[in-house]
Structures are given as C-alpha cells and as structure tokens.
Image (cartoon, rainbow, N blue to C red; front, side):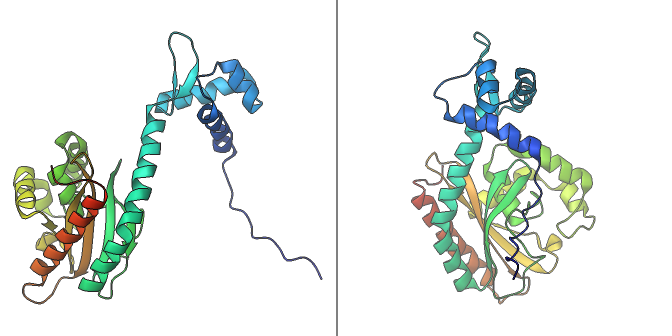
Length: 265
C-alpha cells in the first residue's frame, strides 16, 4: 500500500524568503552589520545582498548608518513589530466582549484598526441576524459611508484620513457600490462633531443598503483611538433598538479601553 500523500505545500516566492533571511540576520544581531558580514551570514555574494538591502532601506524595513555604512533594522520594522503586538493584545482582550455584544444584540460584532488602506477588520463574529456581504477579517471599509470609518474619521488627525477621504469623494461610491453625491459633499467637520458628541457612529440610512451598523471608539493608554468596535444587523429594527445597541456598544468599547489601560482623550 503506497504511503499517504502529504498535503501539497502552497507555492512560495523564493526571493521573498531569501530577503527574510537577511531580515532575520539583522533581527538576531545585537548590532548593525557591514555588508560583507550580512552576505556571509546568508550565503550570497555581496552584490546580491546589496540589492536586497537597498530595497529594504527604500521601504524603511532596514536602514544604513551614513557614518559607518553598516545596516540594521529600520523604522518600519519597528512599526511592524509594534503593530503586531498591539493587534495581538487587542484581539485577545476583545474576544469575550465582542462575543457578549453579539449575544446581547444578535447582530454581528467586529473589531477594526486603522491600516494603510483605511479601517481594517482584525476580528469578526457573525450574528444571528442578516448582515451585509459577509464581513471577514482583512476587509477594508470605506471611511465616509461606514460607521466604523466615521469613528476613525472623528478621532484620528486629518492628515491620516484626508487622502482616503478624497479618494472616496472622487469615486463617489457608497458601500453598496452605487453613485451617491452625499459622499462627495459630506461635511467632514459636521460628521466628526456629531459622532464625537454622541460617542458612537451610525451608518447613514441613505447609504446603508438594507443593514444598520454602529461603531464606537477604543482608546489606548495614550488616550488616542486604537480601534473601533462595530455591530451590524438588519436595517429595520424595533423603535429605540439602535439607541440601546449604541449604549451596549459604548459599554463594550469603554471596557476594552480600560483593559488596554486607556480612556478617552
């Protein structure tokens, strides 16, 4: 009888794996290294190692000391490590709270952080009621037309959100993909003031596409927004239901902020 076949490994990009050998060497070294030591450490000619390092320096993953010419990890490597720690800690602290929110509202519950493309889902639990489009971890949400996006819009500095807002205005697309001039003409200051006053955001009914979403901010130990808690359910709910959902949502967001050692700035 032939031995059982092992699961087929996914195809990989060799050059990326080679590049990560260099990054691991830089990470394991206690000091910045000269090019010749890096090349020897990963077993490649210095000319090849230099090309990888030049790309890493350009992207900020590595940096070169202008005085010595030696290489070490760059500022973006620090950002990546910090982001991984924050997200891991954040999700673990949020899971039971989001499960509780889902059980209380019967709606889906999600956690989003601000990524380089906008609000990004990092944890999600499906609800018992109808929700939109199968929200999943890794989904990136619009800024102007979603409750999650509006929370980040209201508490992040304009320089972080401005470029994405202009892109959405130029496209004039709602979450459902239909043209809506309200996005293009949305008053950013008015949206932010309203959301901050309420302490949570709702989707604009004119852009909702058959569902209702609400989101509230989570603050870290510095008092800055680090995440948004979101719940999504059917658009038609009993009178006063959204206000009650908003109250529960704020309670969950405030408890998560406390677990992170934070609070509203």
